[in-house]
Structure formats: structure tokens, C-alpha cells
Image 1 (tube, rainbow, N blue to C red):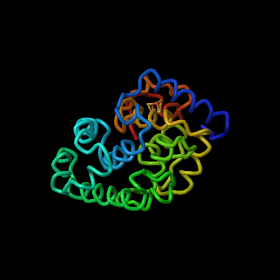
Image 2 (cartoon, rainbow, N blue to C red):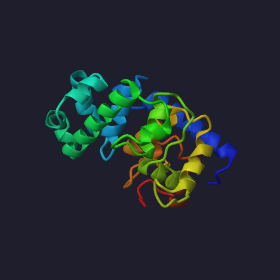
Image 3 (cartoon, rainbow, N blue to C red):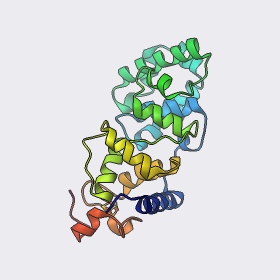
Image 4 (cartoon, rainbow, N blue to C red):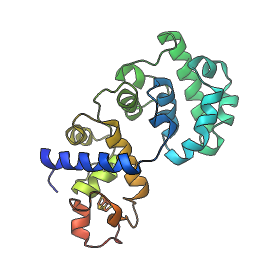
Length: 222
Ligand code: SF4
């Protein structure tokens, strides 16, 4: 499928409509609190939304502010993150980030991509996600899910999430960069557009998907 403005608009609409009806409910998707969204996005690195959802509420009730997080020991923070793995590294980044937010930003989450990206454990994707989901900035996002999605739907392969061309491509696909587009992509990849045996018969994009039109079957996987 060609990546022109019309097809981008169709993809965008179908994903958002599907998300509105079928999207998964997570606590960090129903808030605009930048602190909760930053914590969620930091935890979502290298793990699934389902895994994070099992620890998130408990974590937030124990560390409900940057101050509480900054005052806790790394060992204590890590105990809440055991099931996610990498808990020591995650705890170190979370505590350092909380200390910087307290000292440099008076306890407020910085409303700037550059300042967010400079926080320990916060990469370009996480900073973009916070700008989009918390501050409602029209910022595109690219991670492994998005790369997989573009490859399937458009038949276009990018080198990976750091490929600047992929970010440029998503800035055109996303239009106003509605958060629901990205949550929809995440959920489609997690539940429908599986790497093996995608469930194309349930997919809102099967009528325009490059992979589906070429495979001619719902059972073949790339
Ligand atoms: S039609 Fe199939 S391959 Fe294409 S996006 Fe949907 S689930 Fe993925």
C-alpha cells in the first residue's frame, strides 16, 4: 500500500475507531497526570503493558509523588518491580529521575522533550510518549510495535525504532498525533497483528493491509 495522505487518513481512522471499541484499559491511559504517565512509560520499557498493569497501582499508591519516590531507597523501589525484571536498574533510574525532578523542576514533570530525554532511563520514545500522552503535544512515536505495524500494513521496512525515516513517516501517518492512534497500534500488535499467525480476520485494516493482500491467507507469518 502506498503511504499517501489519503491512505494515512484511512489507517488513522480505522485504528482509532477500533481502539475506541476494543482498546485495553490501563490506568495510565485514563489520566493526564504527567507523573503517572512518566512512571508508566519508564516501566513499559522492555516489558509489556499487561505486566506493568499488574504492578502499577500498587507502585503508585506507595510512591504517589516524585518526593515519595526520591525519599525511598532503591532496594525498596526495586521490591515493587521484581515481576518486571531489571528491577535494580529500573529502581536506580526512577530514584535518580525523582531526585532531579525535585531539585531542578520543583517537583513538576518538565514539559519539554529535551528536558525529559535528559532524565535517567528516559529515552527519545519515552520523552515523546510523555509529551503526547500527558501534555497532548502533537508528537509522533516510533517503537518496535510501530515498526512492525508499518512493515505489515504498508510493506515498508525501516532499520528500527532509531531510524529517523520511520519517525518522519509516522509524523505523516499520525496527523494530529492522537494518543489513541498509538495505543491502538500497541493493542493491535499485542492482540491481533501477532508476529506469528496474525488474526487478520479480526483486523480493521485487512482491506488495505499490504501484508494481507500479498499473503492471501490468515495463517502465514513473516
Ligand atoms: S490485516 Fe493482518 S497482517 Fe495486516 S495489520 Fe491486520 S492483522 Fe496485521
